[in-house]
Amino acid sequence: MAWRDTRRTRAKLALFGFSVIFGVAALVAVNSLRANLEKEVDRQSRALLGADLEFRSSDPFDEESEAFIDSLEALDEASDILLSTMAYFTKSDQTRLVSLRALEGGFPWYGELETRPPSLNLDPKQGRVAIVEESLKIQYDLEIGDTIRIGKTEFRVIGEVLRLPGESSFRNSFSPRILIPYAFLGETDLMGFGSRTTFRRRLVFESGVDTELETTLKANERQLRQNGIRYDTAEEEKEDIGNMLNEMTSYLSLVGFVALLLGGVGIAGAVQVYLKEKSASMAILRCLGCSGLRAMMVFCVQIIAVGFAGCLVGTVLGVATQAILPQIVKAFLPFDLPFEIVWPSLLEAFLFAWALTLLFALLPLLPTRNLSPMRAIRSSSGLDENRRDWLVWLAATAIGGLTLWFSILQTDDLMEAAGVFGGILIAIITLAGIGIGLRKSLKSVTPRSLPFVWKQGISNLYRPNNRTVSLIVMIGMGAFLIYTLYLCETSILKRGEINDQDDKPNTVFFDVQSDQVDT
Image 1: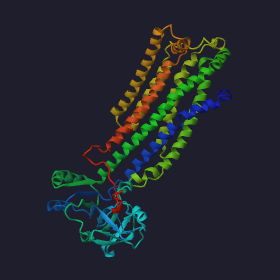
Image 2 (image 1 turned 90 degrees about the vertical axis):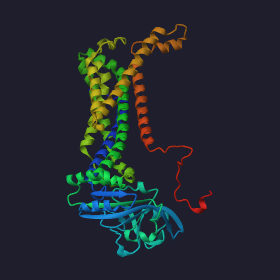
Image 3 (image 1 turned 30 degrees about the horizontal axis):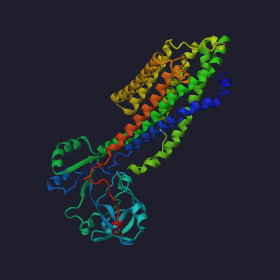
Image 4 (image 1 turned 60 degrees about the horizontal axis):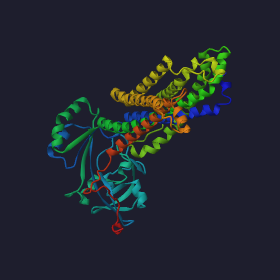
């Protein structure tokens, strides 16, 4: 019966499904991306640093610190020096700011130094060789065997560096990398006064950074800091990258969550209009002996099916989007992110979206079980709007509980989740209060001297079957959620905002040639 009843209204029902498709798609894609990121960060925790432990300083390590590092009895170690300098490309007669890395030792022990051709290394026995960033090869038309001058020394290009453990390609887009053997750095004469240099020593241990080693590091941390030395472990690097990625995915999750809530609010309004058209059919069913609950279930089955179809299409679209996202964000990640369907996250997002859709649809649907059979012959015999329906309140409570539960899953923090839920609840109560207040005030203060069109329009805002409160709540919640999203975006962007003051520069130009200065 539910299927036969949809013959003339399938296009309208399809619109209900479209209300949630994009919200579900965003939620599925972001939740799956987050699960993939968390799994990959755990899987490649050591590869993020390339070693178990890293010490770094802007000055050469002093004897005391060297002695402490040596006392840790690492299985193997490697040193490197990082500095920003200019490189001269003899083939094109141009210069470029680059990030120079002088490497020695077996680094990386975890992960892989990805190069083209594969498996390149910086063994000093090869002589003065260099592995350059892929972007430099393209920009300056470099080929294997070409020479570049760094400081006072020329190096021969033997290939391209594609990825270093723990570094994203975007991080080096302003200052591309050039790798050279540590043994030939002194010949460049770049280590003088004023050079911006970072000295690093990386260590690997047989059993990683165990509790005993961590205790030793904590005990000597203050002394190391006094000597200008910082250290990172693979676990700390994992936490730092995890926190950064969590901020990104939390914002994207908020986008999906807001889209889904807006879709739910839209469904509630659309179902209300749809049921208004179907009220005569429901009344006829009541006249034929059908109970109120049974008549309501005819349309409930329709909405359940449409909600399921909409969520299913949204899930498929979300999986397709998830397949594209790794290609978009790979430049910002220090590791490759494979496409993998995470079924628990996918199922969680699908069930949440479907349940939320049904609960929003039940708000206008549940009161129809009390529809009078007289509605078939008398349009005024509708629903008693002043009647309190405990099932409607139960559905509204379920929406609140589901929202709170999902907020806890997304934030992993009860207080933050309570803040999100409380903000939404306060907004709904405030908007409903405004709607009720507007309806009552218009009823009591509308001047009789107004033109007929104005009086008729204002009267419709408080007459029976008005939708004043529901429309204000729906439109207001839409504005509230979208503006909340805008504020979150602004807050995130402000963290990286450059302070714009008259006496401070806020723009940096790279790769400016001498003949371009005046232009």
